[in-house]
Image 1 (cartoon, rainbow, N blue to C red):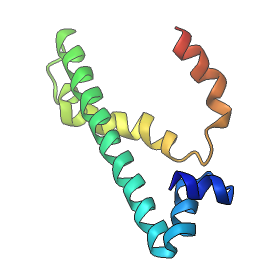
Image 2: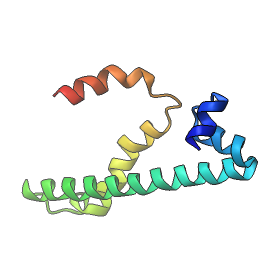
Image 3: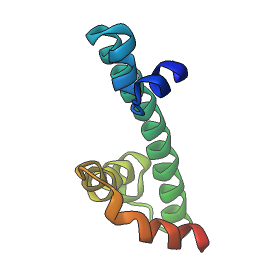
Image 4: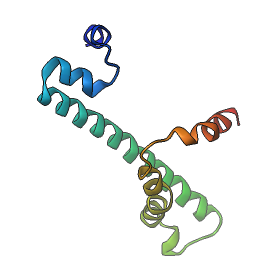
Length: 102
């Protein structure tokens, strides 16, 4: 696949698959990328939700608002969904660089 991409001047996964295997190859690669990203996202959501719920419980919160399920729904609604709606992430490059340095 790497040789095909370089020889054809294509540097996009799905475009290389389309060039090598046609439309079905492109669709299989796209589905594989989506499933991989979705699995990572679900893992991050669960970790963030459980850590935030533990933090709220350590601060003395004992209501339903501090339960893991509620915290996950709020985190997805306030943080994850808006980031997923971006079409391009280039404008976040400077912020990412600062976060890596910190």
